[in-house]
Structure formats: C-alpha cells, structure tokens
Image (cartoon, rainbow over all chains, first blue to last red; front, side):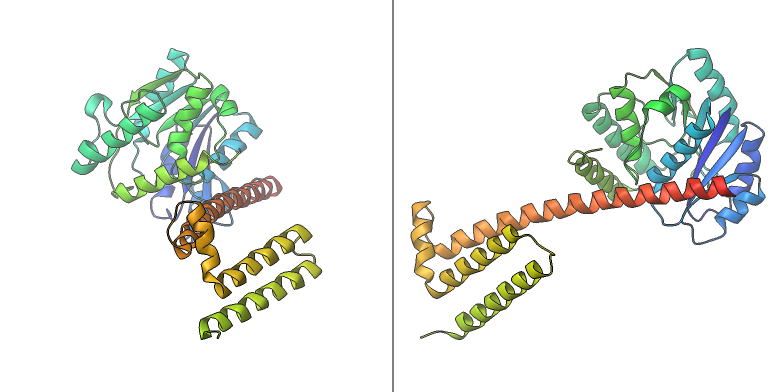
Length: 220
Length: 111
C-alpha cells in the first residue's frame, strides 16, 4: 500500500485539489489536520482523504509522526510526505517512487537543487538553504544537495526505524539524523517546488537550531 | 538601627518561609525542600542584617565585595533554572503531542 501523508494547518483553499490529484497515484491520502481553524478537515474529507484530527496545533513534525503511526498500523509499504498548499508537483510522485523501487534504498529525499527544476527566491537559493545544508552536512554528516525539503518517500523499513519527536520544523533534520543513525540507504531525486508563499525564513531557521539543541538534552 | 530596606526584606523573607511550611503541611513540597528554603531565607536575612558577613566569604574566594559574590551566584543559579524550565516545558510539549496523537488515531478508528 502506498500512502500519502499531508500535514495540514489552515489549508482549506488548496487541499482539495491536491488530494484529488494524489488519489490517482496513491492508494490512500491521509490528511493530518493539525488543529486548523478553518474547514481543512471537511474539505479533505469531501475530496476523499482519510482525516486524522489533532485537537490542538502541535506542529508539522508532530503531524507527520501521527501520519506515520497511522501508516504503521495499516501496514503501508511506502509513505510519501506531501504539502497541502500545492507547492509540490504530483507529476514527480510516480517517477520518484519508481526511482526508489529501482534503487532498493530505504528512503528518498526530494531535492530542489538537482536538475534545476525549481525556481527559488534568491535569498533562499543562494544564502538560506546553502547555510542550512552546510550545517546539516557538518553536524549530521549526511551529504544532501537540499536541506529541509518536505518531499520524501519512506519504505516500510524506514518507517519502522524513524520515530519523530521534534514537533515543529526541526523534524526535517531529525529525519536525516535518523537515516544516519540507522544506516538507512537513501537516494535523492530532483523535484519541482512552486513557491506560493515564501515559507520559512531566517528566524524560523534559528528556531530549528534552538529545537535541535534543546532536543539534545531530552531523553526520547 | 535598621534601615527600611532591611525591615521590608525581613518581613518578606519571613512571609515566604511561612508560605514554605504551609506548602509542606499541604503536602505540596517535601520536608527536605522546606528545610532547604528555610535555610536559604535564613541566610538571606543574615546577609541583609550583616552585609559584611558576605564580604568575608567573598574575600575567601578572591572576590572584593560580598554584594558582587551574591550577584554572581544569583545569575548562575537563575540561568541554570531557566535552562531546566526550558527542558521541562519541551518535555511537557512532547507529552501533550502524544496525547493529541493518540486521540486523533482513536477517533479515526471509531469513526
């Protein structure tokens, strides 16, 4: 079974079309409604998704882990992380899955830098993401061309090993750390990201560093 | 003669110690904690009544003034407590997430 997980917070506008497009490619779309204040859950249900509702807003990492737990319970073979606001391209899903299957790796990371498919804002492309990438390469020791890209596919094996405890945005680094710790095999795949909103800026990057540092002092 | 600050501080310290033992009686804190805070405030009263006493201790440690010693120690303790609080809040956050997640999955199973 191939499951798409969409962590969603106030995404009622775009989520319906994202789900309908995905349903052609995956067996089930699971939307984790992270305490949205709008009609995200209703819109997702209407479009044919399974909705898991967080009663309180817990952050993107928490929402993804809830989706993971669901996928473990139903015994998914593959899980894809997808964005609810339509910034990822559904056309990338099929080729990415095929590439992962063929490679025999445990996990696939989407990359905005491979293949030059994405048009990024200047500051993000030339300063923020290279900074995040250097930090990740240096401290985590996994060489990836992109850091914090939300497009990922996990196999059941990766799903069993990776347990996220970072509730907010630091989960992206946490996943890379887990891949390294469990010696999972991974591949990168070029994906297109269309910027509807700017997304995370420099101050959010600082919050990620804070969460990562704090996480070092907390027992799992 | 006592200056106004000394009187106010001693009243505040006594009031706080009274509160500590009230909490001890209600079972909110342990006997050890109650004694610790009692001794802490007793020491604070001594330091306020005889400021020179802290200078004696400070000189032993190579610090000129007693008031400086107290400020150094206070800042170190406050930073440590802030750090502990930060960790504690993050741990509570993670517990909250676990509860929210469990409920989300159970709601789905029941529907």
